[in-house]
Image (cartoon, rainbow, N blue to C red; front, side, top):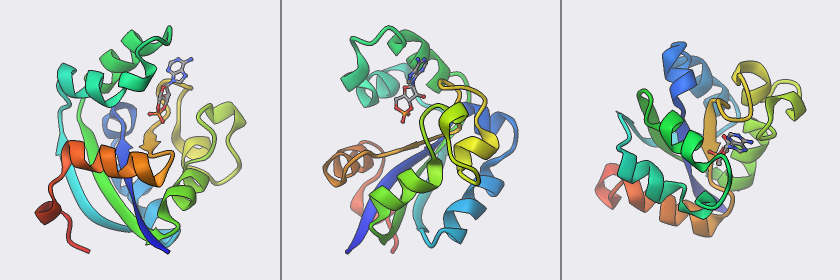
Amino acid sequence: AIERTFSILKPDATERNLTGAINAVIEEAGLRIVAQRRIRMTDAQAKTFYEVHAERPFYGELVSFMTSGPVVVQVLEGENAVAKYREVMGATNPAQAAEGTIRKRFAKSVGENSVHGSDSPENAKIEIAQFFTDSDIVG
Ligand code: CMP
């Protein structure tokens, strides 16, 4: 089914001017960028977004990294978009990511791993709603 997922191009990607290169991988995979905005995430936004990881030892580091520079928030649309984007991103840890994936090609480390993608259609809806309204999304 045609689905939407939420994506973030993280500060390590914007810092190295990789947003176009990553968007090219996304589009070559058949995903359509139906909403996109470059923002500086606030501390409150990052804390809320990563609330599920609040008890993890890396939470503080994660929030400070995500607010350390510009990010690009996106809505991607396509057939099985959630699973498809996770495949295109590759494993969270770039050392374990498959050849040709975004994280294998561009990520620096498990923390500075260039992209985020929703892990389920339910979470995609929640995450999209944190950054976009319906009228921002043009399919
Ligand atoms: P993301 O998909 O954005 O969701 C949670 C993030 O936590 C994950 O990507 C990683 O970038 C980050 N993360 C996971 N494990 C670690 C770790 N050990 N140290 C720092 N960040 C981590």
